[in-house]
Length: 276
Image (cartoon, rainbow, N blue to C red; front, side, top):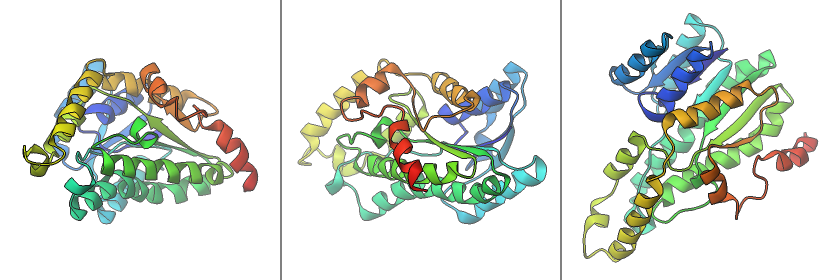
């Protein structure tokens, strides 16, 4: 299977690209800056597998279209898309500028949509294909000081759940992958997105934010590894009848269970598939 993985410089994307290559898939690992692929390529080499690297910025239409076109020209049609690119944005609504909110939505939601738009016509025409959108438990359950990030992931979940029954009629399976805490560069990136207002001791949210940070640190003490999450992606790809929802750990399942009764998403799709 020819797989395109976004956001592959580190973390879940890099681990997924290597794990899929180890399964025998032809993998194109994409990222905004291919110069950051050293760790990915070293990991692939250590396993004796090959991963192609290409430049792709999910916030740029031309970059997305170019990467998909190069993949199809060099390797063949994209049969599996793992939409992983994303980054956190920490802050509650008053602490976020309109530009920060828009940028978070563009990267985590619209970026995934751009890549889906680029690969779906070919998948639909061939009557086969798989899309795995990496969302988060934050796409199910809103979390304090993650207003923008959770909004983007909620949006991606809603689009995916709406798209899935339609694409199933064409033989294309759309799934969401929902990790909980994962020990990756994502955490450091989230730290760099804390605005100066949050760090101001006179900010009215400072005390609340301090308590939130303490709770978050406890949650990441038992975080999954990126390789753990990649193993769930591999299992989903192996599945001849892929589910809509894949939670990546017992902790993630327990976290969302009070809100989410339909844990694998199939009860909803059993109803909505009859509408098309």
